[in-house]
Length: 232
Image: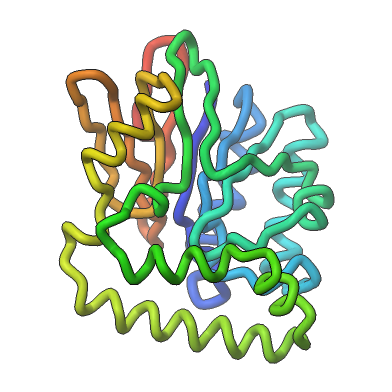
């Protein structure tokens, strides 16, 4: 059994979601062959040097799992793209690139966070290109922790305001571009998050599985084994 999760958006204001995650890591995850976290584990990330109580809890949970021999893989999301080697090493977690492929019980599967597929959201893609420039990231990480936290909150507020003026279609994946990416990697299955629209889409040449976001009363967990994929 392999588990896939994404879009937990862990933060201090949603302790129930953190509770769900810790329970998952203690009960289901130890029985798995591997765990894949496809981005936005945290609501935002301002640098590996932050050591809040929440971050320490999550770090301990992942570290406890990987120390038992269960590998944990992570693809950065649009909220926590600054998670780096320092945090990953402390957790025993392996960082993956924006797109990665794996043989999932005989199916070549492409995995990603999903934001790169939403090319119709031009404004977001422009923002993404800027914040993924290494020199901008290095400059930001040189700022005092308190200032980084303030900037992150401002960006979060601006993002919420921008979403209100966008259509649901713009914020979803572009079907043609997504098909091209899957063909490029010669995959027959895609698993991603980001859009928060849990579903399984059966296309003519591939299957697209979308992970849902986590809420106080629901955790979107995809379980995959020899029999197939299902949400649990």
